[in-house]
Image (cartoon, rainbow, N blue to C red):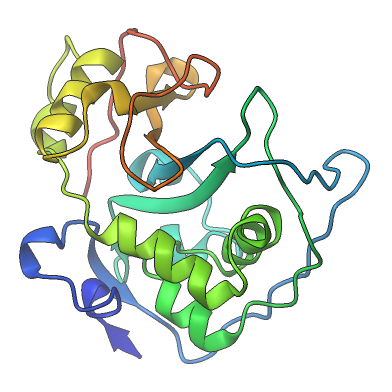
Length: 234
């Protein structure tokens, strides 16, 4: 099934539609593998102190990556072209740890996967985000992903092609550019993470308990003001 991305995201206006150039959802999708808490990732029930909306830069993720079955939808060729994609909406704790795997998670229903896949282009990642984070926030996968894709779909993005051409770019200047593109998001609410070689990896946006963008706490991770590079979008 051919689907232009933002027709899937709650009918948002065209001015906010900047996440994907093309998104074609296949007729048949793999079934997600259920995930549960384990020794390395235990169940943690605790109060929520804030939230993080995590975005991944898809051209950087796919750069030089073999299109395995896991990544074929996101990185497998010209049918789909992604810019920033939604990693997830995460509940943070009131200290350095966070709630996770709060209750057993059933498989995300296929209609919800289809509504989310052009934002989060991995069936298994969708299941993972629901199991690890969504079960601590929402009564159903449908409501969790409606909330996360709603926040994601309202974002605007700076000119990534122009920024990728700069040789003086830092995580701080990128945070300023991102904030400038989004009225209501202060630069202090934007944290930038980079991969090996200084390549842009993710952008983490900090929100308070009412899901309003707010300055990040010092213990919420992300990079400091360091030099960075951006894999160019197609």
